[in-house]
Picture 1 (cartoon, rainbow, N blue to C red):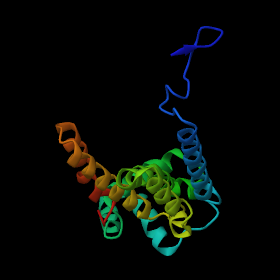
Picture 2: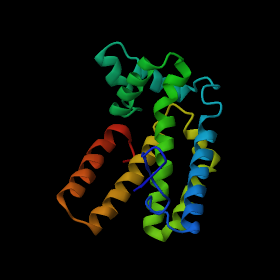
Picture 3: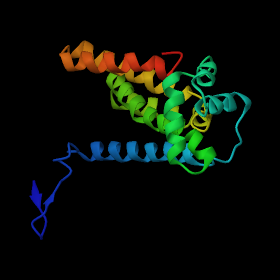
Length: 192
């Protein structure tokens, strides 16, 4: 690794795996699209009041008794409700705290969509998959709703990506990663 004038290590583009101008351009485009996706999801995230079905999730995550919590699980996955409850305890603004988990999952979907698209169709396929999710108004809306739609997407993409990875490399750690994600999925997503 090269060193700057003070003797500190400096990574050069080739050392980062970006040897050609085209690869650097693709990396810059990827970063720009990811930033756009984050912006669209963060914009006005706490502006809206809870809808009826979101209120049910909110009530489930704030249930005072175990029986009230279990009653709300008919419409809310248990681990999703628990993680929302933990997030709300750390964020003082109630609307933002309630929507923090779906927002974070919506952001996690972006690199997962790129990686899965890239694995299936190369870099261009990854960029197309990423753009389809970044600029989709319905998916942008999912980031702002207190529902598990974004976690559904995270787990679906993660399971498919890990499954394909395992098919190409059947080492035990890949099987364990797939098994762990697949076993956690029903706690966060009814569709997983």
